[in-house]
Each structure stands twice: as structure tokens, then as C-alpha cells.
Length: 94
Image (spheres, rainbow, N blue to C red):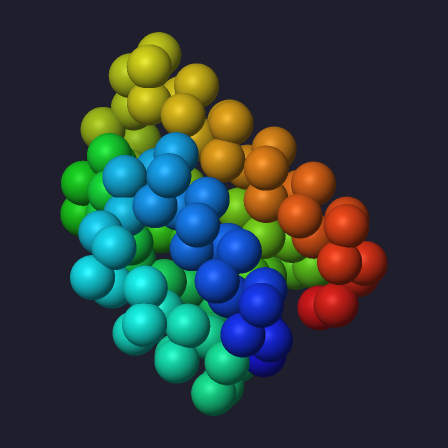
């Protein structure tokens, strides 16, 4: 499970860079802090396939292969770099 601080910082990245809806933040934070959830569909710029993962000791996002474009690949890569940096700053918590 994530702490409230971790969940909010993750969602900040998903919202600011990934286009996640601000109105979904409270639900994300509640779900991530109340039980272990490996995958969360945040959609955003990636459409229905945009997912946040907390699995295998990592935080990262993915999208459907059929939705990939060079621009979306760059957004995904930027988010994943920010999430890796955030996890590193928190220390390995998974």
C-alpha cells in the first residue's frame, strides 16, 4: 500500500504530465492507501489504455500498443522517469 503522500505525489505526475483528471485524485488516493493495487486505469492522454502500475518493485505507466505514437511514447517515458525518481527519493517501499 502507498502512503497518502506517495499517492498524491504519484497522481500529481499522472495529472500534470499524463493528463489524468483532477476529479479522480481522491479516488486514486483512497484506493492506493487502503489496499494493495497493482494497476490503476487513469486514461489521460493515453485514452482507455493508460494505466499506472505499482508492481515488481516499480512505479510505471503503460498504454495499449495500438495507441502508441512517438509523441505518446515521449510522454510515457517522461512519466516513467519521474515515477522512478520519486520512488528512488522515497526509497524502496514496495
